[in-house]
Length: 156
Image (cartoon, rainbow, N blue to C red):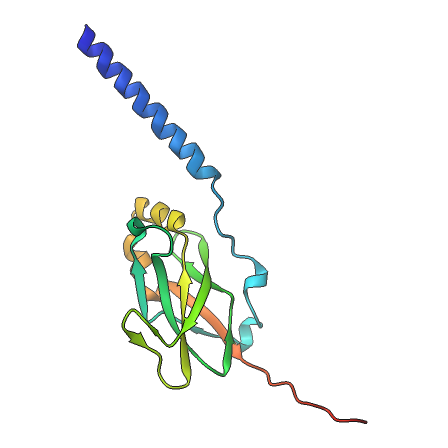
């Protein structure tokens, strides 16, 4: 009888713990895809996929990202989009322009940007069985447009 009581208590505590974690997980904010994060109109925009994707959420924050190579004479969106078939579109921030990342060197006239996906979002997709889709570079994209040079008008 005592053994069954212990099993029942452990089961109940496990269930309460899982439900508590789930409710906290659902309350954490998800990074939204907002209009301010995108530039230009769709007709004048180019899109690129990442040169490399790193998915290591077990290492903590900032270990899920794509590395994009962007021409220097172009300006890019402020958000990267990740479109998983059968799911919504997810967005992540772009940070830290550089000429080299993870053994990738920018070609002359280009620079590299890291587009980060939230660790929480990544773990949710992995738990849904979407890891392979997350690893596909065709599901990640970054928009960019030709930078418009402002001409100087002198006197009228």
